[in-house]
Amino acid sequence: MMDLLMIAVEVKKGADVPYFDILVNGGGAIGYILWAMNFIVISLSIWYFMQIRRINIIPEMVRAQIEELFEAKQYREAIDLTEGQPDFLSYIVHASLTDASHGYPAMERAMEEAADEQTARLVRSIEILSLFASIGPMLGLLGTVWGMIGAFFSMVNSGGAPNPAELAPKIGVALVTTLLGLVVAIPAMSVYSMLKKNIDAYTSEGVMAAQELIQNFRPSKR
Image (cartoon, rainbow, N blue to C red):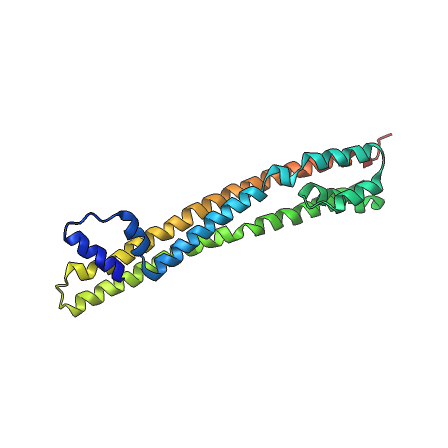
């Protein structure tokens, strides 16, 4: 609060105050929290974009290895290979192979259930971004209400004719925290939407790839 008061005094004197100082110091304690949340959102976004990629969900090398083992009818080796791989494709192919003794329909059901499970797991892993997108504006609103309450009390204490320099810090907190709340929420929700779209696209492609791989187990029609 004192930082914003000093900025208001400098503005009153005609000094050129950088907007950066206002954004960093103008939101008070809530503003610092929102800045920390913004850095967390940026860090998580970079991490998720590195992890949720096609090469990690449907690795071509693993797909080729599974296909080679199927062609050589080395099914036990295929089970061992897919069990030791962390990717989405290996997981659903492994689930399908473990139900091979129950017939092809059971393999398809196992694959679909495993795909739904892994897709839900991937979506849950990025839901923290959605949480930040919801909390950011709420914290911004909290700062807005807090700043406006302070401004009204300043007016009451001054008998209805407050000094603008006294009102500026409190109104500044209200405006800056509102802005910072949106700065947190907009990128968080945008990245969450993009990542969820990527998850849906990659997992759907992974299911199609797995279905092609297990076609050898489909009973031939007479």
